[in-house]
Length: 331
Image 1 (cartoon, rainbow, N blue to C red):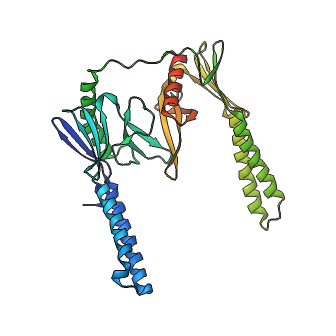
Image 2 (image 1 turned 180 degrees about the vertical axis):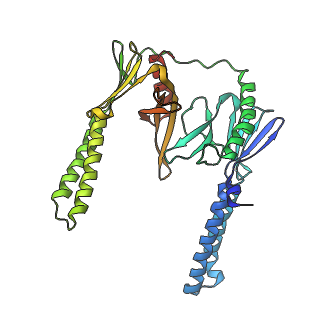
Image 3 (image 1 turned 45 degrees about the horizontal axis):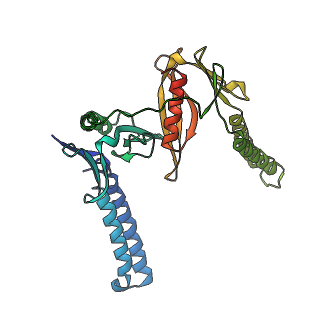
């Protein structure tokens, strides 16, 4: 069995139950850690001249870490249609989540800034939240394991959710009577923009650029390169501060305008192709979700243009923002 196959998503489909194993990559982590720990222990025994008895605490610590990582690979997500509940079992025997099907919205792909994606299960009250991971990570849209998972396991799971959802009253959608994220002037809805923070960051970068330019530095070329980078970053922040995104309901267009006309764009409601939410993480820490609108390019068959309209953190805020967009666009 190859290392790649160890990291793939596995699932088991039964008449009234689907069990998914999304954490196979922990097998690889365990192998890598075992090699690292073996090397550390070899160096420790070799140069510290320590006996096994005195080193037993360190050996036990490494062993426990390896056991935890290896056991994590057997964590599974179970969808049991008989009781109408989803369970997450850490290491295959510790229940950490138990959610009724009636509270679940479904499984959707989640894209990351690095270009990878995985599939996550979302609750109805947090459609754009963190979600529960139900697949391994993928880097290619045509990954055979991802395609098989979507074609085989996901439809059965959604069928279970739909079966139990019919027993509950439909969810009430809040009526939009005022706008939280837009300023309205007649037929024009302009996205609210917090300028102060972007301007401050822009001025800081430009100030650093001037400081580096006139500071005593041995390499003039290096100073010029760094100064140019600081200026570009500063101008990018300042341009973002004065960028406006406006929805014109009379002309059925969306306009993006800023200080630099080169970046101005106009999109038609008729070319709207959908919305994508992109979760952004840095060093595995969640920092926000970008809301991107896609439009078919009328002059380029099969091509689409993307417009990033806002970045939010909370699922409820994203849900509200999308409701406002659909209301404005009459969808």
